[in-house]
Every structure is written in structure tokens, then in C-alpha cells.
Length: 354
Image 1: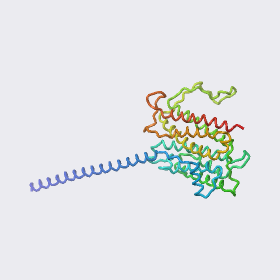
Image 2: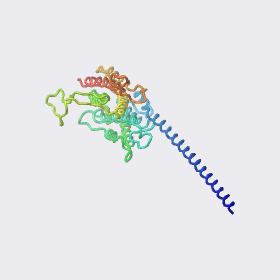
Image 3: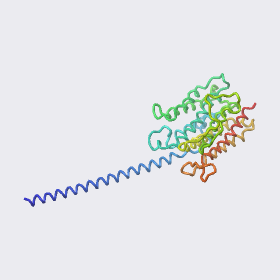
Image 4: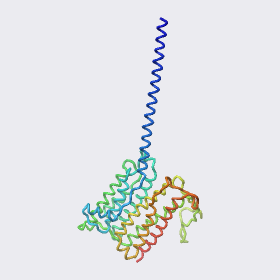
């Protein structure tokens, strides 16, 4: 009886050891499989981030407008190229690899900030040009009526760029694109004289005035990557000028370290959009630019801005001191933008002359 009991205990111990070993093996297999799944997801996320982080390629605004006009069977009238370029920039922003990322709340795009800042730079230029279309370029004088399609497009592009839902930003921007396409179709119709694009020097000067302020601000923000003590010139050249709140005679300007790459990529997006818009303007305002002998000046501005789109070979945006051992990508970008901005100021002054 005792022998049988001992035999049963040995068997029970064997089964317990066997079950424990089986449980350990199962756990190891589950952990290994989980590790493989997590590793695979991480690799996929990294690949997507790398792919989505690449800015779209540039396009030829004039040739693209010709192809669109042929496809839509529309006449390529004055203003068609500029309008179509604005539409294409907006569609590129929304339909590039990864889509529109600025309002995403899911990985991997929620971890990305370079391309969302690039998108914002493009969006600001689309907003500015659409506003110029609505307020100046499509109207013959201040008392003339606004174009109904531009009345819809301009505020839609000014919708919150980070709205994820109720409604999503993309839906509002596509509504604006639809309105611009309607304006483009009416513009190209010879039987419809309500939609107009007035390629006048004063209209071009009005848009350039906004561009120079955008570039001036970007240049200052980029230059502040290394920090600088700036003399306060807010009230300079006007002895009777006043301001709401007194400020110091010298102002310390420095971009926070975690915003340096944000400003850099916003500048990249801004200049990307400006290059295309200026090329379109060169075509639509060609006659007035030639008459003012300003065509060469505009082309030089475009060339300066194209230098900002060179490939960044460093994996991060470097922020070395001005004459230090390491490069400072922000200062290089600021140099190109400042030169382009100075040329735009001269061009606007030329357009404003009688």
C-alpha cells in the first residue's frame, strides 16, 4: 500500500514538473512572438516615417497649367496659371505620401513634426495668395464686387490647420479647392465676363507686400537660432510714433532649441510654395514685368529661393554657432531668404512706381 502511494506521488511530481516546463516554454514562445510583432511594427513605423518625411517634388507651373487646360478643355487665359498653381499646391499638400499630417493623432504621424511644419509653410502662402486673389487681383477697383467663388475659398483655407474631427481640416481645404476650380472654369470661359484676373502692377505689388513681411519674419526667426541681442527699432524713423506697451531699448531674441527644426521646415514649405507661385506670376504678369524691366529681377528672386530646397544631408538640423566648428542650417536658410526678401522689396517698389 505504501509502495503504491509512493509510486503515485512520483507520478504526480513528474506531471507537475512536466506541466511547469510546458508552461515556461509556452510563455517563452508567446514573449518571442510578441517581440517579433512589436519589432515588425516598429520597423514599419520607421519606414513610414522616413517615407512620409520626404517633401514632394517640384513641378513646372506653366506646363502643368497647359496640361490641365488641355485635359479640362479650358482656355489658358491670363490668370489661369496662377490659379491652377494655387490649386495644385493645395492638392499636393493634401495628397502627398502620408496625406495631410498636421492634424493626425495616430502614430506614426503624431510623432512627426518636420512635414507638418512644412505643410503649414505651404498653407500660409496659399492663404495669402487666395486672399490677394479675392481682395485685389480679381477686382478692378475697391468698389467692385468680390468674386463669389473666392468669397468661399479664402475663409475655407483659413480654417484651423490642426482640426482632426468635426470637421477635419482636409474637408475644409478640399471645399476651398473646389471653389478655386469653379473660379478657374469661369475665368477660362469666354462667355463669362464676371470672373476676372487683372494682371496689373498695383495688384502684384499688393501681394508682394505680404510676401516680404512673411519672409522678413522667417528670416528673423531663423537668425535667432543662435540668439542675438537686437536693437529695438520698432519706432524708428518716426519721431511721433507711439506703442501700447513700453519695451527695452535692446531685445534678446532666441528661438527655443526644440523649435529650431520647426522653423527651418516651415521656411522650407514657405519657399517651396513661393517658388511655384512666383513662376506662375512670371507667366501671368509677364507683360507688365517686361514693361517695367523687372523680369530679370523676378527670376533672380526665384533662383535665390530655389537654393533653399537643396538636400539636407544631415539627419538633424544642426545649430552650430555662426563661426563655430559645426554648420548652422538655420543661418544658411536665413541668408537665402534675406537676399530674396531684399530683392522682393525692390521689385515691389518698382511695381509701385507710375
